Length: 520
Ligand code: ATP
Image (cartoon, rainbow, N blue to C red; front, side):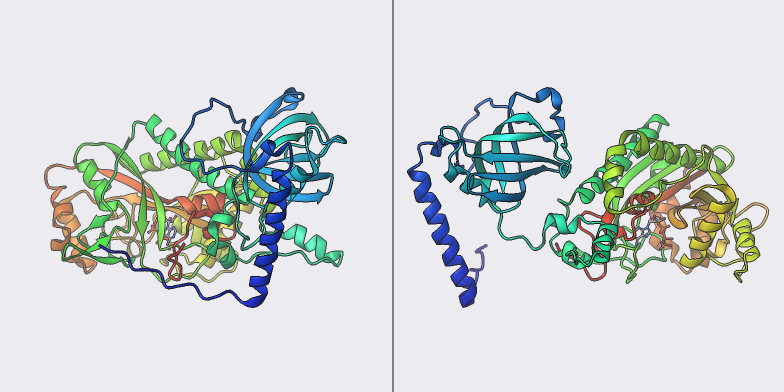
């Protein structure tokens, strides 16, 4: 197929054209000066790196540099984070992910090693340009860089890829509210960057150290989830996201055209992970995108998020699944605190929040006990209601005060507020063998013992207004002998947001999708 030809660009406005012409003249002057410079081989833009050579040189990572490297010459590839000065010397800051180091480009008296033209070249490189720098590691005190006890003295500097003008400055996007407020108190107005501006240029926003750290924490949550469940005998599965019908009722689905037939995007791997148990996998987990076509404009709802799901056979009681949730999350939280402390520190520097408080054995309360706590605190809440966002928040605070934990489990929800496949309580059919789990008063997990009896499941689906025919394969899978089972669905972005105490789930989603946002 032929590509449509792009329409010609409109001419730039006159002031921009003048600025561009000036910049071009300056660049031409610098190029001419460099041509005449005997040191010109030590700086300049590199030709396109196109896999044409393998030199065997070794690039050092900035975060591996220590005082022991003082006196050695290293080669690094990093971004130009900031530039000050010019003339005979320029102080630059190089950044590699969250690590920054000061780079001094200084002309010597005889211009035998570094020329003034080289200083000019370096100091006029646009911010965020990717450079290769060879330099000596020198002891120094640089409080403003993460490598505070050393700096680099440039011997060579070459641009690998120049940056275009930025939609916002990384430094402006990396400030904490406290820094902005402190400056305002002194009468200084610092630039701040709105969430939409950040998300519109997410690639730039993701370079901010706190964002870098958030997504390392996100990766860590997945790693720790996997490590813990594999250690408990679970098998990782991959169920389809393209499905024939709405899986569970309730949350609305995205529909699409599937080779001429209607289809949906999965709202969760619920039915398939249960079918995997019916297929003798015993204990399964999955990390998968899930889709919700809900018009929820809140700080904690996305239309696409990552589900961390598990499902397991139980012998007698859904407490067996709660024991897994307990061990799993205590090990995730311990792991984050013990192995990702540096990242937590970087996030907290921009988004301060108290560390999560959790008990060695997770607190379990019943829904009725939760309602009783809310009522005792003067909140008029119906005994058989699902808790709304506000009630969950308040309960989170009450539990924190009474039990000293920001993490707890609430069990035995009213059957009427749970999906049809939830097993009712044996002693009270108006309640269910279900549970939600909360961090700082917000839901991160929903789960239950499931109905594994095909006839009971058919009746429950019918009572919920769902045509059993639309669930034929699912229900049939329990007719060939089924193990009693229970499981849970966790929202990855919610866990990251709430563990870190962030105010918005979009900060914990790489390229967030919500009812208004489908790009970038
Ligand atoms: P909520 O009541 O907060 O809307 P839910 O009851 O719809 O959540 P489930 O369908 O049970 O949630 O999903 C399991 C988990 O998935 C939730 O506990 C939460 O962590 C996460 N989750 C659910 N919906 C969303 C969403 N729209 N965006 C991000 N995460 C979500």
